[in-house]
Picture 1: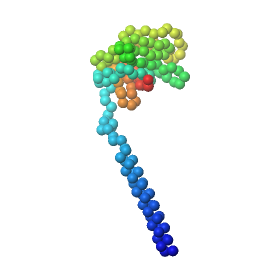
Picture 2 (picture 1 turned 180 degrees about the vertical axis):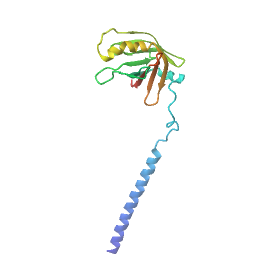
Picture 3 (picture 1 turned 180 degrees about the horizontal axis):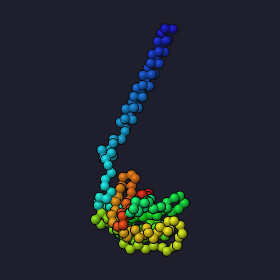
Picture 4 (picture 1 turned 90 degrees about the horizontal axis):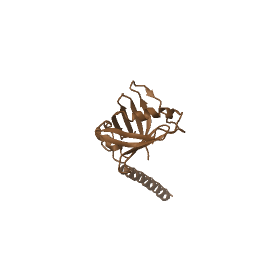
Amino acid sequence: MFRARSIARLTVQTAVSRKAALAALVCVALAACALPKHPDASAPAPDPFNPAATQLLDDTQWELTGWKNADGTARDVPHSEGTKSITLDLSTATGQRRAGGFSGCNRYMGSYTLKDGKLGFGPLAGTRMACATPAGQMEGDYLAALSHIDRSGVQMRDPQQLLLVLDDGSTLTFARRAK
């Protein structure tokens, strides 16, 4: 009887030791699989108005999410579920820099340039539908703003943003869209 208890106790101790060893092995394996933290991950975001940053704009799609007037007041930007957002698409698919998007009521298209760290647009053409929606009422101002860009800023870290500062001091903020 004494021998049976000793064997049972030894069996329990062995099982506990195996479980502890397995748990330790799992912890070591998980620690070995942890991704190292890149030293730049905690660095401050780079200056979005660095002229080199605008070179990252080719083949990107953006959605207008904010419009701050020169006096600091915010302008309402329609972008709710069920309404189509104002968009800006920049593409080099044809071998030329082509811009296009939805301006609140109509589609627009034209060329764009990236020169001296500034995004600029050539003449823009568009469809000619009339709209009474809030985005449709903003369309004329939005298209005019694209021809009055003073500075361009690009933030490619999350949240990715495109900032267009107009010559009157207003700022249009775009969020990056997936293709």
